[in-house]
Amino acid sequence: MDNAVFVGLSHQMILRREMEIIANNIANMDTTGFKVESMMQRTEPAAPAMTLGGPRPVKFVAADGVARDFGQGVLTKTGATFDMAIEGKGFFQVQSPDGPRFTRDGRFTVDPTGRLVTQAGLPVLDEGGGEIQIDMERGEVAIGPDGTMSQGNERVGKVGVFEFATPGALEKAGDNLFRNTSNLAANPSLEARVRQGHIEGSNVRPVLEITRMVEVSRAYERTARMMDSESELSRRAVERLGKVQ
Amino acid sequence: MQALRTAATGMAAQQLNVEVISNNIANMNTVAFKRQRAEFQDLLYQTLAAAGTQSSDQGTIVPTGVQIGAGVKAGAVYRVGMQGSLTRTDNPYDLAIDGRGFFQVLTPSGEIAFTRAGNFSVNDQGQLVTQDGYQIEPAITIPADAIQVSVSKSGQVEVIQAGQTAPNVVGVIELATFVNEGGLSAMGGNLFRETAASGAPTNGTPGSVGIGTLTQGYTEASNVDAVAEITALIVAQRAYEMNSKVISTADDMLATANQVKT
Image (cartoon, rainbow over all chains, first blue to last red; front, side, top):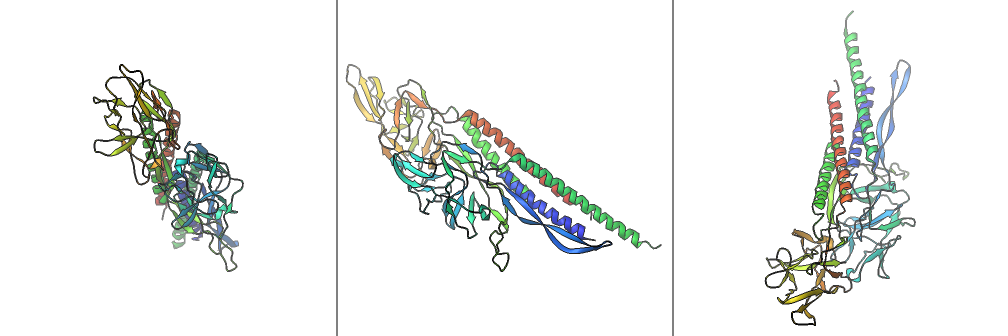
């Protein structure tokens, strides 16, 4: 009898989480290199309920995972020398105090010691995992589509772009960084193109998010109404059965 | 409900964005102004189910986890160092830098400040000063009887004095460059101060390797693109609205929860 309320409750809990994910997507619609997320649900079978027509399956709603859409975000021209955007699959690798991190946020700069770093000061790594040194006295820096950096006609380094067979296994670490918690190998990306003077916007489509938000809010109400009528039903049952004829 | 707080971070971020954009628009006609950009980063994630954890003894792993983000924060407001276009003024004391570098200016406190605004004047002692009367470093003094002043691309200041035909060199303007120009801190009045992030200045004559050249009779316009700024303003406003919509929807959901009959 109480199954309906608990099934409804499991649905509402998931809807609330989904709402939180949508809120995070919308809050980050202007975040460089942000990848949109959505909630995946699955049904969780429970012990069957006994009804007049025999046992009937009861299924709860459970969170199955957060799907991340690694689709390309819009490239915006900034004209800054060390702004880089990746076109296609792949990530830049940066060295954080807690180990390597991956990012598609290519707003880099040069620190006073001449290292190529992120806005937070984390060194950007080249293909071999080493830091990149730039001597600003040697003139303008040009970055080729494969990440090769040159000053004049001299090669000074190469920004590494890495890809994963299943990028879904990466975990978000905040600050536009991804953490590799699985034991997947990061391979140099062959297809990705580095675009100098551009940054990649987020791939959040606000209209889609708002539509999903309306859906979630309505589904939440619907479930609440279902639970309402369920409790109304048990109230009436108690009333009627309790009456002495 | 987390969604309320998440949306609030989104609104705060867009508010900062509007502030930065409005400062850019206000400084559209400021000499050598470099436009700024607010950049955002996502906040920490709460991991409810970690990806990559073992789901059985057989070594199968959970392919995707459940992570819920807490919103957005302003990562940096950085200055876009792109060259502004050169505007002709015909004033002999207007100098524009084409390429990298900053003029050095001696502030009243004795500190050296840096600027790209080359709209200079001459004070009562014939010294080359900014519009605020701060001397440029190294000091350049124009003789009172100078008829013509010319500044070469490499910073040599030459004057022709009354009764003479050959020009006299009265000084050389030096420019300072930084490893990380974005790390300079703005002091207002078109001036910048060196910081630990910018590194120490390197002085050199204009036109040497890695340093821009001077153009006399021109000033550098701001690099603000009015159309781009207005477009950014519209986008920021809509984003603000969407975040407020999230707040009202989350509020509706909470109201629904409160109305469930017991």
